[in-house]
Image (tube, rainbow, N blue to C red; front, side, top):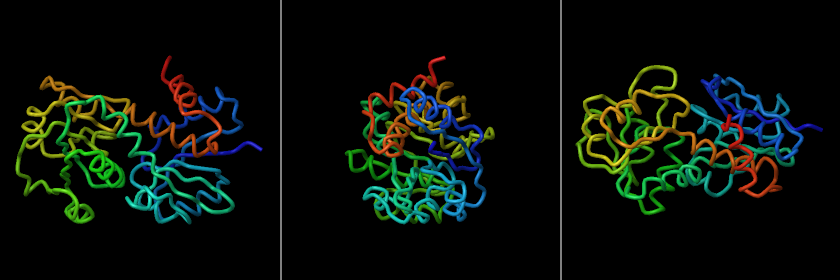
Length: 263
């Protein structure tokens, strides 16, 4: 019987995950298909997952913390960071994983000089990536609009809201908000971003497939930049590995997924 997988998010129409996973399913001759589902209420995730008859799912903004709550079981890393982006149904139970953070850690190595990092945002993706970066030896601080969400991080990181941010030098600035995904907004006030970007080695926007205002600002100042396509592929490889119960090597999965972007 064909297995069905999906990605839940809001928005979700832009997602390349169906293309990427379906290309890999076909290439590796795995009997499955992958679709997308616009989920407006994250609290309904578990019921929707089960009613759709899914074998597994990915979760994107803004539902990664709701996905954490929806799971019956969690792997150790997902449990430690409180955010889930990959769910697999096993023996009637939903098990949650987080492949965002290891996927991001792999792509950040392109910026070999980076030691001090500023993350913009305080959502589910930040929850996972901030801790894996810290554990890998990076100095991490967080800047966000929402002061209440910063409370989740203030015991372990330097945290700032826009109105109390004290400018300093950062090697790498990372946008982990949805600003620029469906609008022309910057993830923080322009007067803050211009100065810190100008003094950085580079920026990353986890949004992929478009020139966001954040990336445009970096390029206008001749600062090295990259979008989130590498993170998308890296986390997708790990998710596919869980979906298919480790039947394929990670290299084979990666090569198959990259075919989705080779035309």
